[in-house]
Length: 356
Ligand code: SAH
Image 1: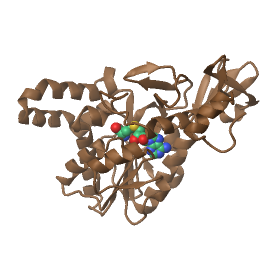
Image 2: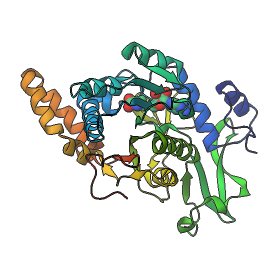
Image 3: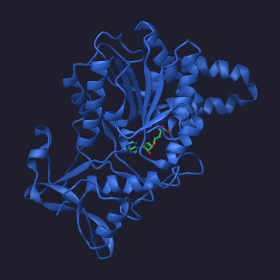
Image 4: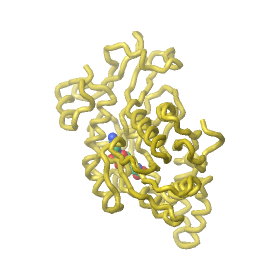
């Protein structure tokens, strides 16, 4: 039986599991990640995983240059820098420093973050920042330039599995003393995109209503207030089938159903769903860019050269950072970007072709 009122608190999650109460994959992921992020700083070599801004300052700097370029072509309006799930604040710090070299300085820095531990780390890094509980709490007095890196991948996904009796939502339940996924009882064919419904038994499909709702709120704000959004994540252009849920602990894949709340749970992001959620707001939606192409178009190789010239002893280290961000076998192809812009705002740099 699914839980009636959204995701349970972490303590409730553990209790629910103890009494063998099945919950949706989305409720499980939301509760486990709420506990996980609230109780630690998971980033970096000593933590569980490393994100692009933690690999190299070049990443955040190029995001800052992207913002400064768009802002200057928009006529240099006052704007707020907004970041969703800013981690340690590294991306924001690098981006704002780089943008300020072009005279591009926001009137406010607004961080949407739920974790008290990471809020403290962000405030130390960005003393001018204000924290917001959710997108709806963002001020409405200026255009918003919203950045989200590895944010959507941490939000809950529902999973559905094709059984002999049709599609069923995948539930998490306790069996023989262990947690495991199992097909639920209620027919769920209507939740499956029509193009995937006839897939063979055993096929798994994910949906992301929470991500879509957040994207849509950002898009409506941008349409109303002006501004743009840059979403960066590992993912694909859906609809597609497949179980992409994964758990990472100390830089290794672990079983997502062992020790809930102690490993980072993520799923690949369906960028088509994000774009479809933004579209009703009337914003302009870019085509997808791979991280490698986007960083090259924004000038990562020139930035590498100037950093290397300033610190020749770090040449090998800087080059390996660049490779991790750009090369297809590393983050260059799996990670993708999409941008949305307000009506009347210029086309964002780094994206291929005409808007989607
Ligand atoms: N963007 C950072 C961190 C990525 S980790 C980087 O690139 O390094 C995911 C981030 O999203 C963390 O800051 C986490 O606390 C935050 N987060 C996860 N779920 C959230 C939610 N529902 N609302 C707001 N922030 C959330």
